[in-house]
Length: 323
Image (tube, rainbow, N blue to C red; front, side, top):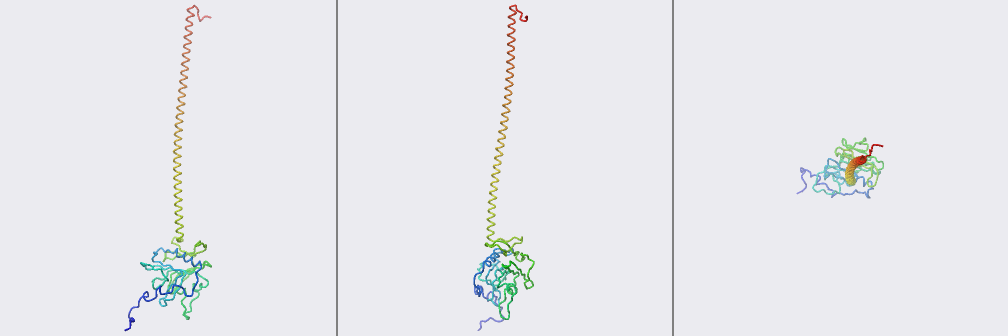
């Protein structure tokens, strides 16, 4: 008997019938060589600052320069975006390190794709060169992102012109957002993507990076470390200043106490001087009194002596009052 399923049997789900990431090639066929530094650092900066407020880390996958398989009818077809992010993925007990991103296995399409324009791929990336359907060629990136994956947001950035172009899926087609002025907010992520002038890995230029609802650029891990180090330095400096102020306050209190002691000593010295002056005045008054008393006694002695002499003269018959 045949083992083929009956026509009435329900089809098996793609996860069970289609190839997995282990069955599919994880390198781009026909491509060789390493990407340039900009294609290394720009995706890394996007990854380091992609922290949507409404999705936990376990529900986020970020891919950079890995195969993205998108067509269940042609399971070997893939594109290799420079950078993409998928959110809302089912949380797994043990998350495998992906070789590729296989949409029928993940069950979630990318929410945002970023392509870094190069002269050889720019027209395809911007939808200016479409496939020749008659030749049987695979769909272009633009067609895949728009029609197969239906990515809500697609962004291109040229390092040659520093131009960022934002495309939003509206009515099943990409529509360019022309009024973003270098900053574009994505409500579904509670996150914004903008052009930032700054130095990253030693290169000062315009970069794409994410910002939060307050408009602040989301820091990289290195910037977080630097901020933590700066906070620690400031706290140490604040403690040092606090200690210096406490020492200055203690010194001021000690100086104040010393001044108060000096003032008390001066008051005591003044009091002692005043007492000495009072004692001197009293001594002077006593000496004056004694001198007056001595003069009185001297006068009394002189009068007594004169009286005795007069009495002797009278006894001799001489009148002392006669000339």
